[in-house]
Image (cartoon, rainbow, N blue to C red; front, side):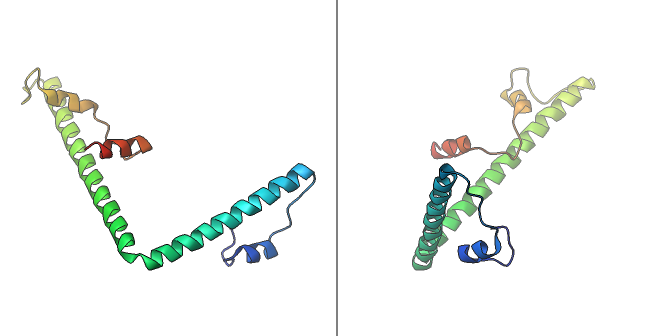
Length: 130
């Protein structure tokens, strides 16, 4: 609902213009969407009731997500640090200096690390394998 002072579906229907139902197909689509809306609202009520009754589960879930977020932030910070070190060693060599890395040191590969904050659903699979 895009109205700031509307909190229920009934209030939204009172202030919104009626839908333009032209064909039987439009009416059927409207009925389908109304059923889905009722289901979604009931689901929200059920989840609110579940959260009210199971405070320990809610606290455990919040703790899990806080720990996971902290772990991911630490991993990203470590990748950024490793990448910055590898890049600095490249800059030293380009300036005519001598690197602390050996020629076959695996830390050279850290130059190619992805340090973006973008995550995807695939990242969750990696967490499960650890």
